[in-house]
Image (cartoon, rainbow, N blue to C red; front, side, top):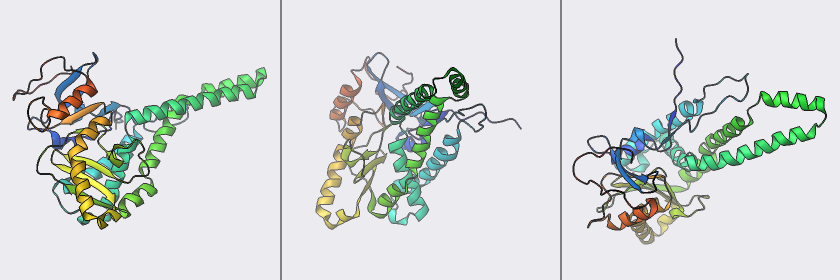
Length: 315
């Protein structure tokens, strides 16, 4: 039987997560920065956004190693997202979070943790640092054995060793280990209270960096307060169980968080924003948000088409 082609389209914004923002045509509104520096507004399917090719790929580092390059995607990320999708369906059905099984709570907590670890920007920064360290180590080995005969052996060994691939693989391994972190899971499952908040007015947007940690504070750990839009009308909230002792304050906090969640999404510097409806510069609950989007991604290079005709293209 012929070997399957490796999976190369690795979604850091999972398709199941983005589907609640899609319309009957299967598309959602995407806002991003076009190559010319202007705001790009177009309609896209969840499959065609929120991914990078080979994002989680792990390449064998010597001629003697054999493993599928998409092992992380197929054996870690895909099962993780499949399990989270089932929990997501329960949460958006507004079933009490107390009805989740222990396995479902673990699956959802692991998914939340993954959103802090799997984004291309985070991985790119870690890749650069890891490659730099690996390159320095190779130089150290060359310096340690200066004799010509030793140099020949060092160069022969290094010729069969891809130090940059090793560095990137190490970053992917660390990502998987952090996603499965027992410390995080124990904290969020046993010390936090989970709830789904459904405000009467307004609609939530999301992005390729949808998780807001500690109210958008740049320091994401330790995790005290987590919010994640589950769809245009649902906001998942995870907060310390001790906050239940102050119900009035908690209620006010939830209302404020729901009000500013969209702004926090924009401030998180995503590569793309997603919305179920146009973020218009006309009267309505998105009028202020529109200004923030234009400031974040540039001024639109053409008047957006907000009629019922699907808009396509890559800007």
